[in-house]
Image 1 (cartoon, rainbow, N blue to C red):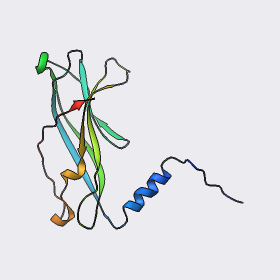
Image 2 (cartoon, rainbow, N blue to C red; image 1 turned 135 degrees about the vertical axis):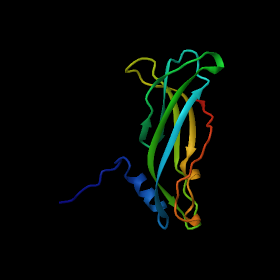
Image 3 (cartoon, rainbow, N blue to C red; image 1 turned 45 degrees about the horizontal axis):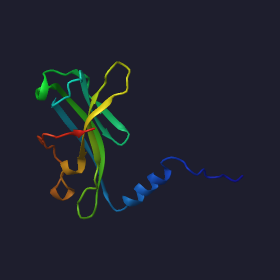
Image 4 (cartoon, rainbow, N blue to C red; image 1 turned 45 degrees about the vertical axis):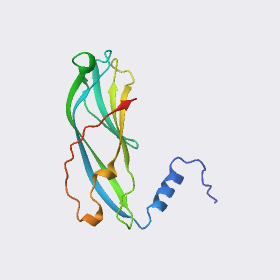
Length: 151
């Protein structure tokens, strides 16, 4: 019996290429948490917002909250923590490969409707970890105001 390999299998060649690029690199798992305090500068027609944090096909979301205020002071107090786990790979010179992720402010106009992206911020998780040369990974708190660009 002869088995044929199906061409066009999604992900197989991409997965193989990633594995090849990681040869000789050190693998480290990290837990990343983001505490979202609030969102400011919302458009007038937006009544509810939520925030999503996406990395590849993994997404975590905050609950939707009501927007308040008017004009440039229009915003929403989210006060939620989002957490994700990621594996980062470091080269022999102790530099981590980029690990892109994005924070998105979402508005769902009506129940069941597809969310509208209001703004996006791109984050490289590799910027927030200690390199293997600095010793064992230890928790670090970084306070950062993220400016979002219109979605």
